[in-house]
Length: 613
Ligand code: ADP
Ligand code: MG
Image 1: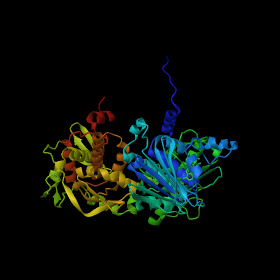
Image 2: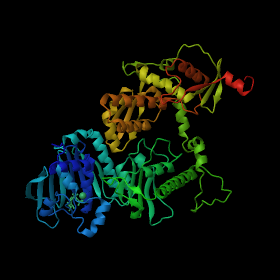
Image 3: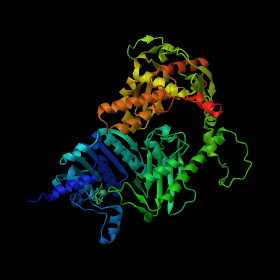
Image 4: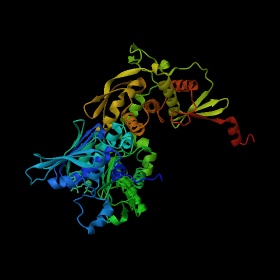
């Protein structure tokens, strides 16, 4: 007898449903879309365990009558296509009428719904693909649908569900996307009975951003719109300016013809528009709406329609990149105009299009970034010098292990070695590279990379020698609520590294103590880095996860605490740095893998001058 057997229909349905519904966020998406289709103006989403045990969506939309409330779970049951002529729509929007049927195949559903015109509503309970109970019920107009026990009958799928945190993150991102796409709908997101985000209806997209994110992010958002508006291709929305960036892509949102999409071409073009504006490996916050002729895209390349294909990607790519770049230039030139007095332009420039807009030389600005930035933010330079970790700290500090007050000197902090000095310091080039004469030749030391390595070894291997200090002015760090939810369970990792952070209100963290080396450093970027690593590595097994985050945090702490390129050091500080580097393990590379120093040998020098062959 052959081995092949046909699966019974109900098993086949489970598999098909499992393919469409991989995770709670997929269900949330379908339910919110149904509520939007039903003209709801208020949509509440309630979750338990990141949606693994409960997803409930309550809307004030059209509701269903008693018949529809039972029919809606049947395969291909839809009120959205009426006749064969609309098959075209089926092709462009994917098969209709499958969402509730798919959910019914792999979870338990309780549906309560009522049309505005009816006196009473109906409650329907569905399990194992069939209606278990239906009762008339008094309820508000609209629909309340609750999904419990996801994948209870598909254990293989259930096993693949990720940690609550991961599922929660996916749902939060989806929630933000809906909020941005439909600002006139009032959305609320609840987790474990608590309202996490409340977004009342608004007409203004930027206000929607302000409802979702912290003030630090939203104050740097600027409107974007392509200049020559064409009906076949239009860009609008908002983007963050050069002051604000994130450590992951989670706040880059694209909508094409009102559909939230993830598209590699678009992100690449967007980031090209930000080239030289924000550091590499950092990402903006954006809500970009692209409206394009529907025949110029293919939306059937993804089973859940989350990705799309452009027929002429270069055209979209170029327009996006150019619009982003121009928007940033314009914004920046406006800011600079306010801060720095320009000499009047002495040449005609064809790019000058708007009255009062002086085209700004972007490339030149960024090559001189340090100077201009310092003009704008004069306190930066003061902060850098006052925070020089090489100057002896005078404060009373706590050592984390003994927790007793001790006076600690720089020598102890840096474990100054007793190595004999085997070099002659010649000078410093570009306030960054230290030049030394050694018997082997000329040595160049990158002052930042060198101190980064020294501090990394100290933080990672000899942490008991690191002193911490209670901050007289604790740092308050505003964060988006989803970032707080991500980092809060892991605050102990910071604590282990001498950074005492606590939750402060609902959307801020407070940093109360740090290693002495970081006492004057702003820690918001460090914390955001850690948030992005938590998101990136949370699928790792617990021990490996902790190790990875810990190592990355220590490397970044070393980077933050180390002197920067451009900081002027005293001779004493230079000597300390060089002697300590000499006795530091792994001293030839910084923790990020860049060289700390290199040698121009006497041989090479003599060859250059043809004194030797
Ligand atoms: P589709 O949305 O593609 O039609 P679904 O399986 O998602 O398929 O829903 C089936 C039908 O159930 C919808 O066509 C609609 O008539 C009805 N329905 C589902 N959710 C709601 C809701 N929140 N409010 C009103 N009607 C709904
Ligand atoms: Mg639907």
